Image (cartoon, rainbow, N blue to C red; front, side, top):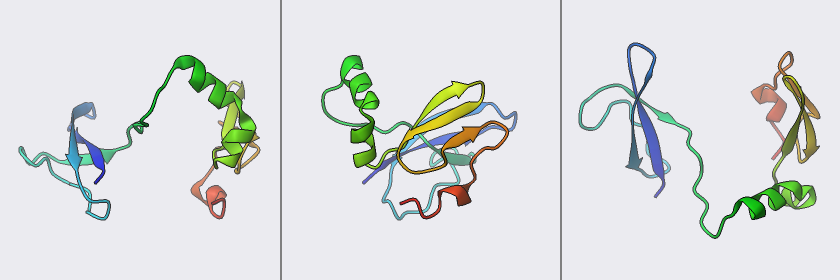
Length: 110
């Protein structure tokens, strides 16, 4: 079962305590802290990937655009202030601060 990260929603808007909960993927997200009853929200956290990792091997993998495309990833590279160009994968060719992508831009890309 996956481990989800939750964060307490504080009245002042500052980030609250974070905690982890093991839940089934189909279980609804928690709305309250299991011990204190404070309101919480599930947050996105980085994914843990097992195996060996090094700065050098990671940078080589990120540069291999054919491999990224074959694995279904999309790679954008910063081309200026608030401008990102697609190097490989699916999605818009250009993302800018003035014209950000919307969820509808991503439909049908899978």
